[in-house]
Amino acid sequence: MKQDIGLDFGTAIAYLVPGVIATRGISFIYPELRKLFAFGPTGTSDLAMFAILALVGIAVGFVVSALRAATIDMSFAVSLLPIRKMLAAKRLPEEIRSSVSDALTYMNSVPRVEPCFPNLAIDGRLAAYLEAKAADKRPYQFYGNLIIALAIYLFGGSFERKALETDQPLVLIVGCSVAFLTLYGAARRSHYRYMESVRHFNRLPGYTCLSATDDMSLDRRPREYEPLPGP
Image (tube, rainbow, N blue to C red; front, side, top):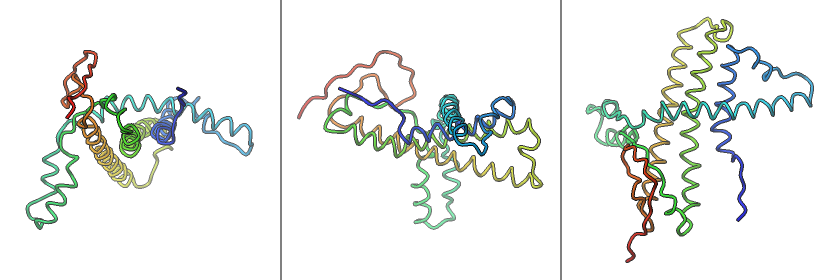
């Protein structure tokens, strides 16, 4: 069966935009990369330069994604329940407190769960899984990658005075802090929703992954699959 191999829009955005931002940050340290951002009035050369920048951005984006997986993704398994309880303070009315608590469920510990792929091949479940992947996995990857990319940009910009020069440094610090917290909250929420979708698909009748568990255990044995007993 013929298969199309390529990057969809969500994948490109999740890697390309953070990759370009990180590349710009690295260019402050490695000036040779600044040529990728030297667009002029010409047409053909600019188009070729943009194509090169896109390829470099995607490549750097994959590196950024690896850093995100090793740092931000690991933090999703850490419970932020004290913050959730603080935001849903007792002094708030019961209805508001309950709504806030429900809305902040993603602050609980969310261990990573791998999909049971044989189970997705039954009754068109793969299409539904791909929808969940596009709706939640790509966004959390984008938000997390953007955090790493912005951190790289700020780090690289610190080597060039004009890059971060401002008359109001406090505004810059507060703005960056708000941006990082907002992006992290969005990434954690999307990750929670995606993991909930994966758990739902894994619990559907069909196949069960014997070595795929919902905890953080490092079971490196080959996965085994067995059909669930019929009705």
